[in-house]
Image 1: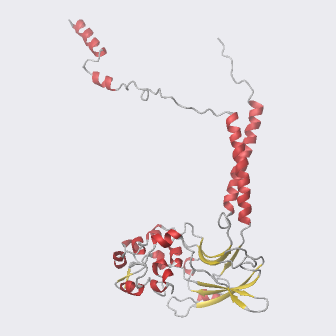
Image 2 (image 1 turned 30 degrees about the vertical axis):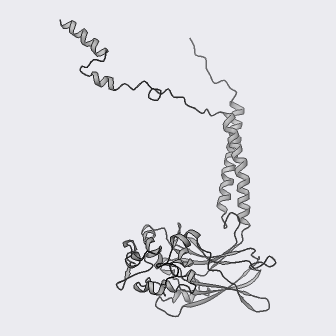
Image 3 (image 1 turned 30 degrees about the horizontal axis):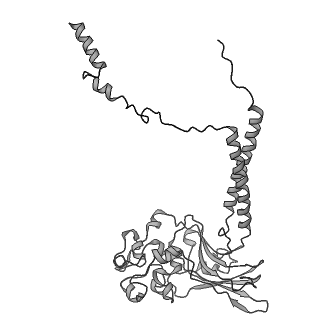
Amino acid sequence: MASSYSAKEEDGHRAGAPGPGGNANRGKKPDNTAFKQQRLPAWQPILTAGTVLPAFFIIGLIFIPIGIGLFVTSNNIKEFEIDYTGTDLSSPCFNCSQSYNWNSSMPCRCTLPFSLEQPFESNVFMYYGLSNFYQNHRRYVKSRDDSQLNGDLSSLKDPSKECEPYRTNENKPIAPCGAIANSMFNDTLELFYLDPNGTRTQIPLMKKGIAWWTDKHVKFRNPGGSNANLTAVFQVTTKPVNWRKPVYELDSDPENNGFINEDFIVWMRTAALPTFRKLYRIIQKKNNMTPTLPRGNYTLEVTYNYPVRSFEGRKRVILSTISWMGGKNPFLGIAYITVGSVCFFLGVVLLFIHHKYGNRNNSSDIPN
């Protein structure tokens, strides 16, 4: 009887009948489908000399000319830089950098003469540059209220807590609040051309059109609309701690005042690196007959308002032209040339190896 029962139990397990461990064994078996049984058609690339070598040569022949074109274009961009930090005794701005006082009502002025050896054609872009200024610090980047900058009246009266410790001052909300706005660059730069006959001509600098269109028309708006009386709207607020004047007095032009002031908008777009430049003004070309900035002598008049000694920074002014690829940046051309050269070199090396060793019979006879 025992042997008969064991045989029946074994037949039951084989037939899928319930028993000890029967359901578990049956549940582990995958369904008989093409997906679960891995019978789906697949494409397996096989890397051969006939496919790899042409790819290396094609990449090299494409990248190297592109890199040369980018590098030559970047080198054709004219750029002139003036450091006016004033740390050297011989610098005209030395006294301003040493005797700067936030509470002084009389700003310090200094004049820096320079000369251009080559004329600047087309439009000239005037930048200010700062070094050792970490706008990419996490707390610094977060210290702003985008709702307030977008014209929200409730955020104007009650700024975000992210703006601390520049959220309120003297029991009034700060507008614009935050560390970014509080540290806004406020040097005034003026450019003059010295004619050979001795006359001094001021170069017109355009202060509009320097900000991104999306920032000017989407991200930044004045509270109360474009026709609002900014003096009345901002009456319930106070200026940032380090500002000399409130936000509604940044410009006499109502289309460039308040939160939509383009100098303010440019500063609020934080830089990724500690050494950066930001667009300050545009010098437009008047006609096609004369260069925008002719060869000759110039003077840069600086109203020294922005201190950099506390963080050991440096200040500079950059005059630059642009091309179809933007400003002067040789890195992109060098990167293309390097990648193309490496690919072409690897192609030559692999072609030599394939030509020398590729025809050998690597299969060995297996003895019986």
